[in-house]
Length: 258
Image 1 (cartoon, rainbow, N blue to C red):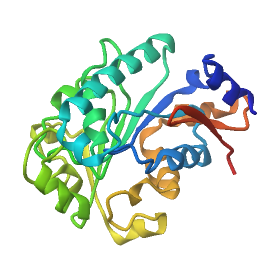
Image 2 (image 1 turned 60 degrees about the vertical axis):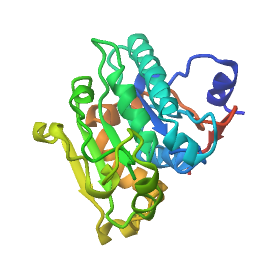
Image 3 (image 1 turned 45 degrees about the vertical axis):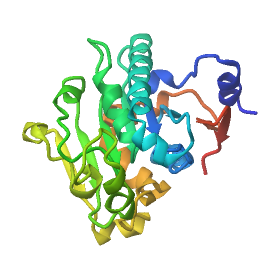
Image 4 (image 1 turned 90 degrees about the vertical axis):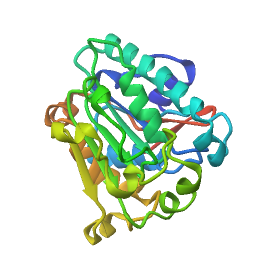
């Protein structure tokens, strides 16, 4: 067992926390899409910090998580507190969030609940089931950087079940993962809507609901956008380790970089 995995299991502080932390939030049901890929992709990109999975589902059933919206809102509030505590303990570190589907609601509400003066760096939304009209102004006020929204008009989940169940914020109509985030905050210039095109197929994103979470997308597309050049340059000074931590269910899994 690596020293990093041992520290995770015993509850000791992760020595890589000082180099930044990126939270990955899975979709409704927390079925594991992108959980491992976010870790290995960021490791391959040279990210010196920690990628940690934030589990929020209490039902493990997507339809219930999508409609019992207080679950996602409560999870977002709790994560906002966790991020605030992390930034308090690690001055100068960057906190980023990547979220999938209904998890993008958890992510946006987490950012809204970060305590001043702390701020999240960047936020990436994949296959978002948040309403396309959601006003992200409150979240942007708690951020230093931008919100990147990867969307696809051909997403079958957003075009099907989400239309019947409603978005994670309780609206009916287009989700952000179909058309981008088009609410009032778009005028800020800090929301970057990125539509699917065939050029992303080389990274494994074919316009589906979960395939934007591929390791190649994490390595080549997402990590370079949200992690500052200063953090990447600081990689040479990080503690040596043979694994990166990802929380999976009730255990810690050490993922060995290739």
